[in-house]
Image (cartoon, rainbow, N blue to C red; front, side, top):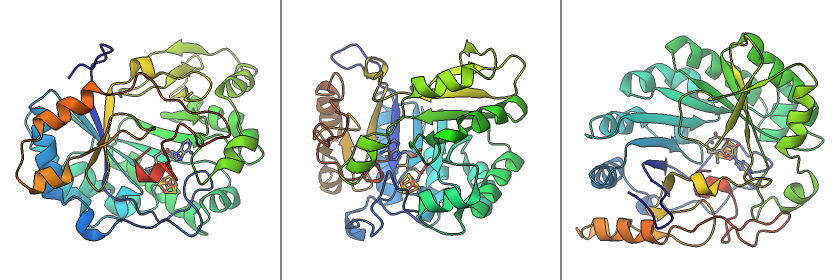
Length: 326
Ligand code: SAM
Ligand code: SF4
């Protein structure tokens, strides 16, 4: 699948639910959102059907995300179904890890090879404050231990930079990579409808993070772990892991974008932001051919996103990244 700007799209992020067991300050409002109705969600069979069609068009890699994907019942069943689709060679998962301790082995057995875990602080009270769910930290640590124990590789840790809440821990996160084979990725906070104050007033650029990390010692640019993403990676000489930066605001990487997104209610989105989406659910339920719809969505994939610091203009009315899978 090649778009009009010559970008090869072989990667789909699938949101399996818009619900979440956390309320991260940068993502979801404390009171939650108007959740999608159950009958509007794609069933696992419907997701697999869309994927079979897309695999026939060149899709190779999928990432399961949400909301929090592990709150959806029996996720390993979906993973098994995806693993059987000819052409899909890589299945990964993005999770907050709160429920990973219980599910890691089953997910690994079903076919997940690697995970990305959100962890915004190394301090218990801060994690609980950012996630706004007391007790999260301990569960996340159990989830990370389980991820290592069952052999997910690589393990990437996503840290959204928030001024005054975790930017004094940049060095602590970077230090971990000297000994643990973790790939710590600092992410710039993106504005959506529910975080405008925070994204306007607490933005920290990844350049600021790199300045701090470079003061700790020499770091060299490296290719980074296996994956499909937009991160740029560095390594301390001899370190077990890497430090990565993801810079949607300071340096967008849209020219390298290789992905589309499928929302939990079956909308195919060619860009994380903006208002373009194609309803695949209703045509699928009507028995229509999805190929022309997918081709047209690819054709109108925008050249870039138009996010502006401190404004939700350009987000396409997105309230929270949990609605599209981040
Ligand atoms: N619940 C899972 C998790 O937290 O990993 C998967 C969904 S979450 C929406 C996917 C990623 O988006 C997470 O790494 C999260 O930190 C990130 N994210 C959410 N809102 C964001 C925002 N406004 N700016 C930057 N990253 C954001
Ligand atoms: Fe939930 Fe992930 Fe959003 Fe946090 S970032 S509220 S864990 S969907």
